[in-house]
Image 1: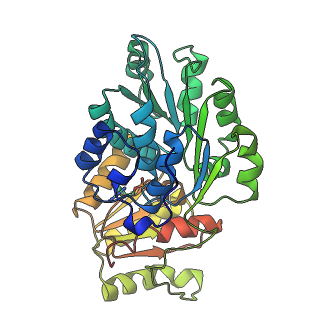
Image 2 (image 1 turned 180 degrees about the vertical axis):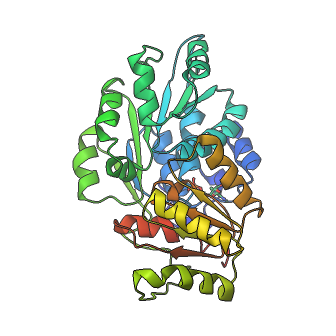
Length: 347
Ligand code: AMP
């Protein structure tokens, strides 16, 4: 077995015990060198170890589990599977994982299916009936499908729990537990969480066997590439202050976080009335509306995205100029996620 690389700076993908097929997938993804979580997690996953990884979104965790897991995953027979199950809290995250896993699977010849809520069940049932090697799912929809006997988890060899802390926060834990109970006890479990706090440890400790702990981010640590400013202001001044800030600092590629869906909508309406280009994204909007809003923002068709925390982690857009915490987040971890949307590539 390969030693766990210590000095991430000098590790290349070819130093990791990945197969030539997986290395081709790396080049398809356009990655040049592994991120720290990839350098640490990939050898452990290939060895079959359980891992618990504290890694924020943006650290490259999706490939950290998808590359090694797919590299060693057998292929399910017709109408069988999944052999690998990835559970993630939001549709947007599921879509991102589906995209990355799909690119890798094109090389490793695996079938990948994705089941999320908010869209019709029938195509998902049909896809599962054909069989799949990998299933990416949000908890609620997977439970629906389990209730309809449309999916069997008895062959799962690799279980990935993505954003475990968020699934706890969102009240998904009873569903996640039910799902995990349907998978074989001798599976490999890979757990990713932005932070590994006590509630996460308490809830998940029993699901893992002698896990390797991969810790990239310290608890509550924010990216050191982000400058943070605090503006004390009365609530009623916020709308005017936000407009003044946008006018002064620029309104392109800005994300504004609001506490509730209705505040996100109201803020968005106000910005539009003031002549800004803005769109709101939150869990009351349909899957299509969310995707369109994210695409428009990513392509620069919309300047300002007004979002609630539920979707903070799903926003994977480069070159965000700055983030406005219009309302304070209720959870410290949400703050970490919010401001982690910027600070990439010198922004
Ligand atoms: P994740 O943390 O999985 O959401 O990944 C965050 C972003 O980093 C995504 O846009 C990935 O495409 C990108 N990424 C992941 N791994 C690498 C890598 N080794 N080199 C460059 N970019 C990467």
